[in-house]
Image (cartoon, rainbow, N blue to C red; front, side, top):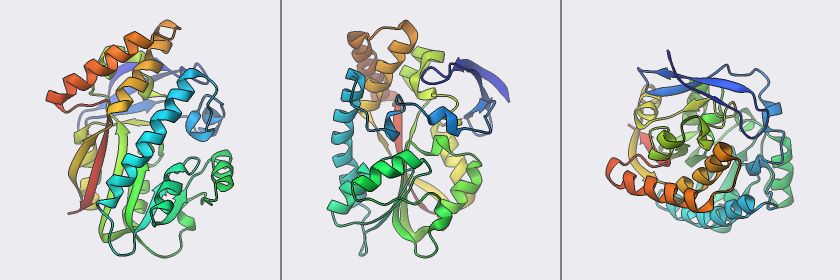
Length: 275
């Protein structure tokens, strides 16, 4: 694999990492991948584990999250069958599962971070620590919202997830897209690289090739339009040390406009079913 980019952990440790390009998969790989990843999540700045709403960026994130939850609910409803069984893998603090439960889904969630599980429990959503704790039953829909990029031993994890999917079930995966305009513009300051928490950085081809051996086929790809703005906001901060709201808005808007033609949005939702 060839070197693609050198960057650093902008939000927690300040440590430097390299992204290596796997040409066969069209995938970027974070190097090195720390053995003890847990310490890189132990920060109040890692918002998906904390529900933080202190800074302006946090508040923007929470506003967008509330809007996104309703959109996610509408998306999974398109693939609901009789039982409406849902597994959310990497459930964070449980907000999506709570939304789905209120829409009459039977919900199960997996979240390894103990603090996030505790916050979810406070909302009435008990989460499992590991997928191996699910002893029986399969699911109509399995979701991973910005989770796949965090998973070590990727093929083993994919195999476990596909094994929990019903024969006619649907797998929904949202991940950042390193081929987007905002990624190309911000380069090593692009916030969605988020090394070393993000171990892998996907393209459409990478998702297709990774899931093909598991008899999974992409049936649709959807954009996550707000991600371009939020990621640009963080990227501006990493690049300049300032909150350049207007520049970030322009860059996010321009990225989405470019993607109208290229289809390379800042983040993409992949909908997969068994081939």
